[in-house]
Length: 68
Image (cartoon, rainbow, N blue to C red; front, side):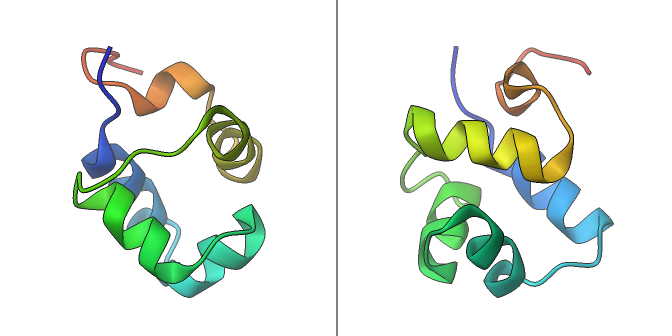
C-alpha cells in the first residue's frame, strides 16, 4: 500500500489547520507535513500512529485504495 499525502492534506485543510499546527501536534516540522502531503516523503510508523491519533482516523485511512 502507498501512503496518500492528498488524504492527509484533505483532512488537515478540512479541519482548518495550517501545516504548523498539525506538525506541532505530531512532533515534526511543518516542512515534514508538507513533504508528506506532496509525496516527497512518507511518515514512519511512529508518526503515522500520531497522525491517526491526532486526526481521529485509522492508520489505514492514509493509504491509497482505502475508501474510508
